[in-house]
Length: 252
Image (tube, rainbow, N blue to C red; front, side, top):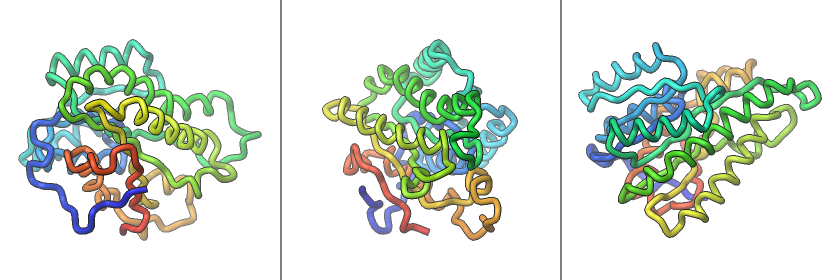
């Protein structure tokens, strides 16, 4: 586990010249990451399944005075390997390359015992939270390898919480994603592509509200509080924590 350097804040042009793909761009941390990366000078590609929400975020980024982002609508639940190959071809053609991916998409079916988990819902959760990130990363790896300094950022969830009763397919997917990140790091350790993970504390998010519906989530920190850490992992300074998990659980 690694920690963010004390007092670190993104430089105004810390990501200038980089093209960053934000997957799950309209979710809590995805949206915050897109805004923070745009402010740091990156060219952003917003990927998500809800076009109106993507367009709203597009307007927010433009209002910052940042470069206009690109929108790429895609539903990870139904996406095929061919769809990810199309994504890679489009990014190469329209953006000229790719320097980073933030895997912030998540699908959570609610807390329920394994014996009651519907097979189709199990497959849906694994598709969005595990299979999609793998297939996308596999398709985009050749493009990332052309970058002088490329980053892949996975968003983890606290294993002390989600590897417990009733977390079902979501808990399984998050455990498997930790394994995916470790294997991918080992395979790219001597390349220009680096892998790291981010472990935020419980945030004010739709997923949190669904899991803890009796909790006042307004008492939880906003995802925006942790977006600087995403910028850190995508920037050249993130090389210091290559292959590690950046643990933010003590940040508020």
